[in-house]
Image (cartoon, rainbow over all chains, first blue to last red; front, side, top):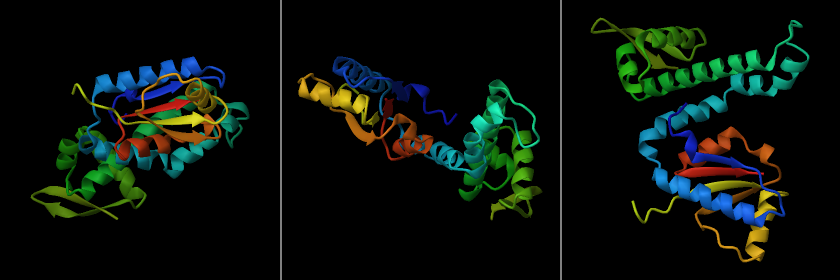
Length: 156
Length: 66
């Protein structure tokens, strides 16, 4: 979601007796990352910070922690959830939290109107307005007034 | 870019991949020195936050192996 490229993250299973396999995986991983070149830390700083805030957020932590309970025993209302609908909710919430965090960071960087935020983070105006209303409700951002006929926001 | 040496953080499970890496060392098998290994007691211990932290601190790739 942060756009750094899924190919930079490798996952592999190696048993303790498989030294040869470990060597192969290590070599393949290093080669793959070498092909992709160095990660531009500056360009992805904001996206990574937003991703960091997202995976550490209370909503996401709760949601992930409750996965087994929700998909096996149902939610607090006793409604059963299959894994697909649980994951759909999780992905939707991840995207929403991530975009909200990006907006917060953009405002902190001085992009205070909806149009400026959109130009900085590349999310459309309608979605930003919608998420800003949400951030206002939870006291994360504040509407501070009009400037050149544009509403301006500040992070609380 | 020809002599670019990527920095890669590897999270290795103590019981599987770490032992595998150890054995590779003992058996004198050659593998690249770009990996910075973090030994974890289980690959389930690896939190997505660790991976993001690694990228934020400037590594080019992450390997999780269990």
